Length: 242
Image (cartoon, rainbow, N blue to C red; front, side, top):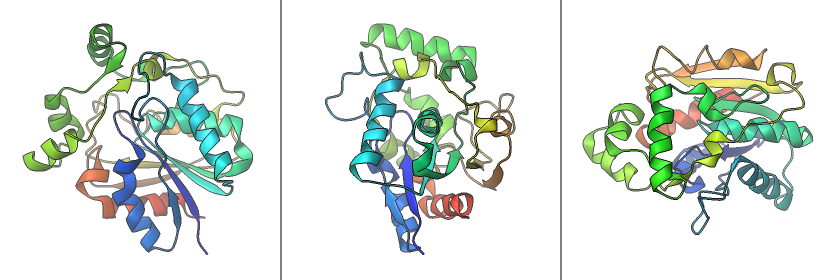
């Protein structure tokens, strides 16, 4: 029986960049959607787009496609978005999958979960770029795609787009903390992910906020969607299955 997956991209990405992963999931007989969130679409105003706009665009996508029984997968920043979706439309969802993703508590923003030097770098960048932020290539190469060769690091970096900084500073409002949410939850952790320093790890620091959850792990960095999309697809299905 075909399951329905919706893959929610992270910062600087679009849904199109998750299509290589989606293709392998579809080969397993499942239905996969890869929307691009408001704030990361061509022509979106990075100065005015925030977390609420990104969330609203995903709610609209699910409504327009009449999707239910969804296994909602959030990568990185996408964890903020899927957390609010679960608060707003739990009836459309079967399971949440956090893929090296942020797991907020009520009232938190993304910046509350990252190192102070990251926040300082982004604040300086946003102040001089119309409230948009972009990763420096050196950070992308050494931290995000640490498992890629230089050729792939450069080609993948060229696909990224400026990200609205408000999505990092907007605080999330949750009626129910994720640990108390009566919904299937999984955490997918790629073990060489350096996007968060290992002194502030994705797992178990953030994953344990989910309460009861399934842990799935695999080798690779933060951007397995580029470096090994077939493995990413296999692990997403492992995390999302019943």
